[in-house]
Image (cartoon, rainbow, N blue to C red):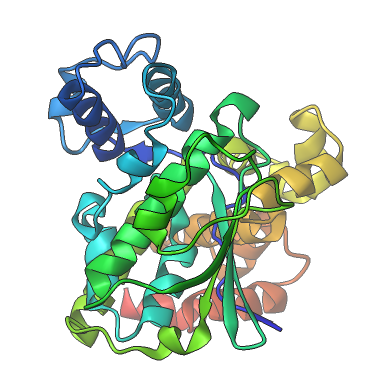
Length: 339
């Protein structure tokens, strides 16, 4: 058994582009449903700004309003999510060399999607087992969002490939609905309900299928833009944001993880778990802050390399030089000369 790329995040609470809410609002209007923005803090005017971003809980409130009006519309909603819905993130799928590359890209940059379930893909005995984890979702919305997210994944794979993905099996955690006809029409297989996990399987040989619009240069450009966007979003959200903000305060670097955890009112174990749920770690955040501060202090020219090392919490300059070379691929001195 081998794992494909790990999902970049382990919880649905991440910032999202406005396009997801726009799609929900349009889907509702087309079916005569109004007021889906109620209680979300979002306005029709904001939906006109293509660069706007929303919090996950705001989008979840819109989903809740829509599901209350159209409780059986999850599959139909999922069919509205095409690769073009996701902007540069979706264009990266289209440009990927193979299905495997597209799947791995999607998992690495999952927080650029509109997903509320957390997908995990594993290779087992020549099959890909794709599980959608809904355990962190409100119970009353789990079925709606599982159906939406799975239908969206199926729709995007259909955008990539000349023929539909032949599923071998399909399991859902929720009870059997009144009819399964729509599931069979969409997925080509009769699902099992009341199972331990939401799980779809397909032949692993599909992963190596070349994609017709593959372009190495295009996917490289897309990934660079996705990396910049996701980095900006991660810096200002969740517990990771709070940790970064506190690490920039005077003396926090020397206090380390116990001091930051104490400042946030939690144990180091809880802090470690919360950061893992957001797809990062204290060490990774510490490195991010240190490299940013190092670049800033070095370029001012007011401090020696030894002084910068001390201010970043290193006992000796050699440790800082080694870390800087790991971050930037060069020594502080060479970095200064190049700057």
